[in-house]
Image 1: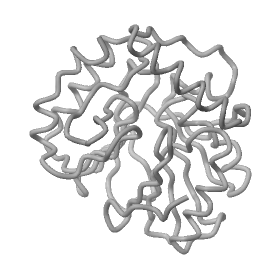
Image 2: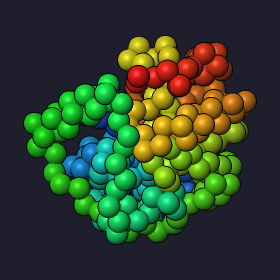
Image 3: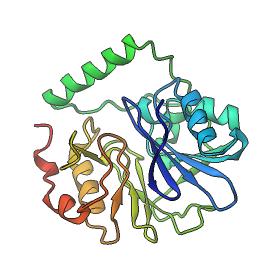
Amino acid sequence: MDAPIEITPTVWQLPFPVGHVYLVALPDDGYAVVDTGVPGSAPAILDALARLGGRPGQLRQIVLTHFHLDHMGSAADLAAATGARILAGAPDVPYIRGAAPEPTPAFTPMERSLYAGVMADLAAAEVPPLRHTEVDVALHDGDTLDGWGEPVRVLHVPGHTPGGIALHLPTSRLLFPGDIIATSPDGSRAILGPGNVAREEAIASFRRLAALDDVDTVCVPHGVPLRTGVRAVLAAATPEKDWL
């Protein structure tokens, strides 16, 4: 894959066709990863880590914003290769472990068409089967993450999945929103992520994140990261009208 894209001096985007991954440098010469791409993405993530000068054993944390295939897909492989701990929102833990059947999204017709196309592309790419995995730390709203060198607030943002989380870094003025916020292909608009299990909850979570007043960068998993005019872009968003 291409070289990691620097978002800040300590955050890099690893762009994937479905579900971007973000690497974060930690102050103890370690790294964290936010989401893991589809199954089979671990070698590309480890290659990106190596390009940044890191070794597999330096990956300390794997933070999953939710349980979907394009976010938890390579968590098991990464954990096995690195010894990193896996962290995820508590209500999503049974689905990540494979202990409960995943709730089905309530697709709009537009979302259903998009989903069918994505799944067809993954099948054509011969993406390996999903491996479920243990979760070491179950996260709740208001928790903070250790070892990041600055405060990292965990926000429970349900709707896309029951246990979706966002990570808010007020000092860096940066947000990892999970699939609650996506962007248009040109990065000019913030939109509601598609395929929500509870659309109204997802819209409320979108509004909660959009109301944060100390965010200048939004590291979306789908689309182009928001890095300029973020306040105006989020204020102009109309998630109630997206995907209808």
